[in-house]
Length: 229
Image (cartoon, rainbow, N blue to C red; front, side):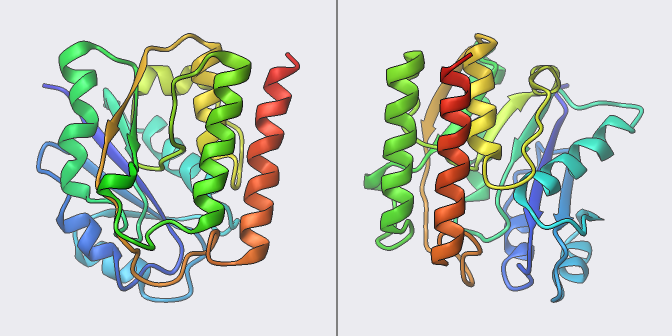
């Protein structure tokens, strides 16, 4: 039977995290919430909802994801598939079945949940997010012939392929780093359209000017770095 683990980075998502965990399909064996230096009840609420909870004091999306991967690497039994999912309830966790289906049915290595406009609640993505996604995916198409349309955080990848990527970004560049390295290593990939709604709470990245600017710089930095290799 295919083993699936979910890693959920969470910074002050006390109001949303239990909803996220509750809606994850039963095919998932291990739900790992990484509290990224939260100061609210994120840890308590995630534990009460049945998740394994880790703490990562270094703030940054990539730091949290790497903490989850370190935890999995120390386990005796490794998963076949890793799913990354945000803790703010903007994604629909019940759509995880759709995200992993191309891996299970077609042996695809890597799947992105694409936040397409027709399935996106009004206001769920900010103008900087929409523009940043367009710019990043356009540049990846131009430089690498990529077919990505989104940098969506709801994604699944075979565990052995994830390890081979040697992920390193600690902050905003995690998603684009994964996609660029997948292209470089010629992983098979696809996108699955997913629903997307307004998050619970305030965004820590797109909700601030500073966050949006630094995310944009980090994403473009990764793209240009790889275009020069």
